[in-house]
Image 1 (cartoon, rainbow, N blue to C red):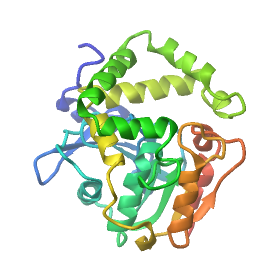
Image 2: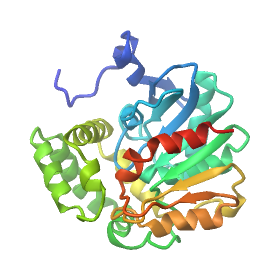
Image 3: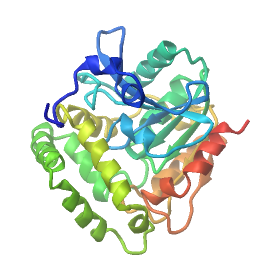
Image 4: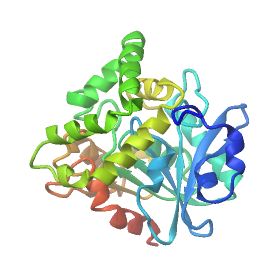
Length: 301
């Protein structure tokens, strides 16, 4: 079997660690939702929403004691079936069905980068079931300052141009799936702002894990990444001021991918949100250097 080919669902019957990373649940509407579990099943469940692109495998990048990280593929990524015209408000229902399937009545949520809006949606719609939410270097509502410029603005513009989006994303998918992709990632690292701690955070091991997650997310198509780009630019069906779940916002001041102004917008408009904005931290280093603090905050009473 070619490593880039989709892995048959029968592989989920394998024993051990591999099986826990290749799980699917069939939702009520017939779609399959892919997920992975890392850590003890008896530990605090933390649902992890990956970045753009990405996959459920991101949840396993770090070994965090005393928690179970549950990575979930959004529709069209990895093992999850695509969902045409999906909306931001659809995601909490998928997560609620998965939580029911796993037997978790209460759980925490982490949204990283492109997973930020989906974490915020769960904070609003699933307030009775969430203990805490963490938004890490997250994208925000379209009106948040910083969403319209630089790389984020380009992504939102792609979301409004389906044909152009399909062409560019398929080119990117081909590059990522290419065996020589590691060299492209090294060049990306060299282009990062030198003042950013991202340069140190993106070790060869981390780059390999990131590439593995990207390849898994884009294994079948770019439908997940394309629909994400569209969703990011659409008006949100709820206000941040109506969120009542405890939310912590973590965002490096030197983030060159997602401006810190977005994180500060979250902290300002979500009631009682707590913002942590470290100097010099970037888009990757805020996770590598603060993951224990992020999870520790979720575990605290």
